[in-house]
Amino acid sequence: DDVIAMIEEATEVRKEARKHDFYPDPVSALGCEPSVFMAQYPQLYHGHAKNGCPVFISKPGVLNVDGMECITTLDGILKFHWHVMMHDYKTRLLKHKEANPNFNRFECVVVIDLDHLSSSQLSSRALSIVKTQTAIDSVCFPETMNRTLVINAPRFFSLTWNVIKGWIDPRTAGKIELISSRKSWEARLRELVDVDQLPSDYGGKAIPTTETLRKEAPDGVMQQHHELIHVRSSGHTVVDIPAVGAMEVKVFTRSFTEVTITIVDENDKSKVYAPAVSVQHTGGKDENDPPTSVLITKTRITGPVKAKIKIDSKGGRFSAAGNFMVACNIHKL
Image 1 (cartoon, rainbow, N blue to C red):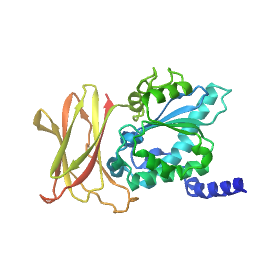
Image 2 (cartoon, rainbow, N blue to C red):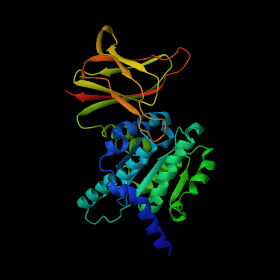
Image 3 (cartoon, rainbow, N blue to C red):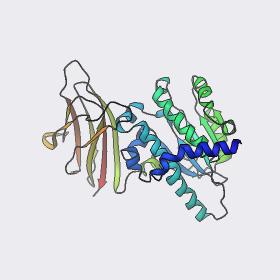
Image 4 (tube, one colour):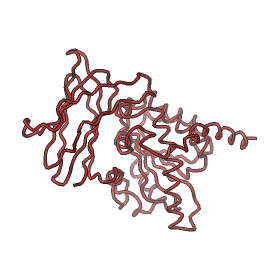
């Protein structure tokens, strides 16, 4: 009866996503490039465990909730989660199976790194994301977790963990280990994963996770710059474009206050690359109404140059314009 009930529940949960083939296009699912999303919430696959399972590392400790709200919606995040599980994860497993015909462990070893986590990050919005993703995984993908290590957990997290455990199937919860001491979790990781498969920032000898994430950039993009700018009356950021690069700039926001965005040469303000582009959120206020995104550069800005991206509010002197996510892609010439 329990099995039948789980199948019926999984069928219902999958129904809407299945209509859309589980969102094969990640950009359409999120409303932005996955690399912009990953800059706010780093998540990556990195090597394989000793038992052949892919190793997945998630870093909610550095989750930028304000940045996430600027670029996507809760609905977009969940659509992307369906994409990851039904398309990306599936493709990785099949490729590993092709290279290793004896591989039959269609599971994943997960590392959840809570380093830098603050209580302010555990907002109702952040927890709603975790709760909904957990519900999908528990019902639709109950056997995809081989082992999960939650590392660098701060003391206050124990209360939150008690809440999250209530959302997880008991059998799944039994596969989760909480380890706060770096010495202890590095030793445990090395029991599960060979050092040549572990990233150097997690006690191994492979490339660091920052470098792996950089490889997730769109084709042809050699460098990216993502920065959330909170604007009262004005704000800016400077991006160094190398001689072999050409930059395009897109801005995301939910601010109803109009701003103008100008790009100039940091060292020669008379050189203007984008003259006063107007940006203002034109959508709704609901959390599932998509944010507004505007391409600032009509043509790419070629290096070498230090490009200053200026944001000037057209609102009142005593009110803040809000948050603006500046996303820069530097393409190789």
